[in-house]
Amino acid sequence: MRRLAVTVATLAASLVLPTMRAQAQEVGPKVGDVAPDFTLPGATRTGVTAAPISLAKLKGQTVVIAFFPKARTSGCTAQMTHYRDKWAEIFNGGKGITVIGVSVDADTTLANWAKEANFPMLFASDANGAMGKAYGAFNGSMENRLLYIVGPDGKIAATTKPFKPMVEDSYTELAAQLKKVTGAK
Image (cartoon, rainbow, N blue to C red; front, side):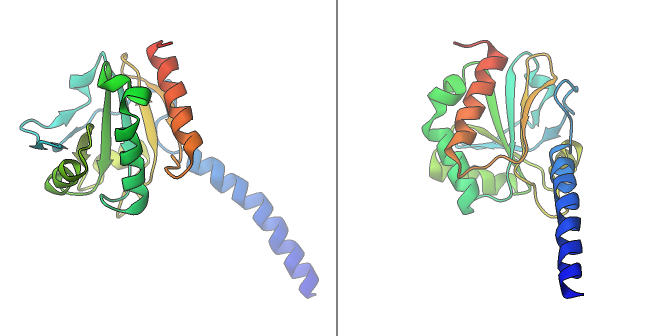
């Protein structure tokens, strides 16, 4: 009887887990969809931005939207530090590419973190999770680590769900996706 229960549990897991993984990858807008617009308080390494960050104002540029759980945590720090250290290589030094890190942290928290770590990218404060909900990243208390590339036409050009900050191939794949979207060599 015990062997039958273990077999049934194993079979159930083999059927349910792939479905759950597929559903997790299907959250939020898909490649080819118009990216949901947003207007959020912003921050940079020089402080809180005077004007909010709006996707509509960035139309015509390639925009990387990187949802992350929480400023100053190990995975988030590793991800943003890698972006900073490989800024020229991955993001063409910010020429034609705008990178926005998004979390539920306050804009002042994000500004302080960006200043302390000298992060070159923009940060957006999604304090109530509205943007995260539109992109399938908000889990009820914080953002899941998802990444979207929005093309100059305002449509989702590529996604990485989830983005794995501790895996070097994640950054190689991101760079390749950006080259494809921007037409860079």
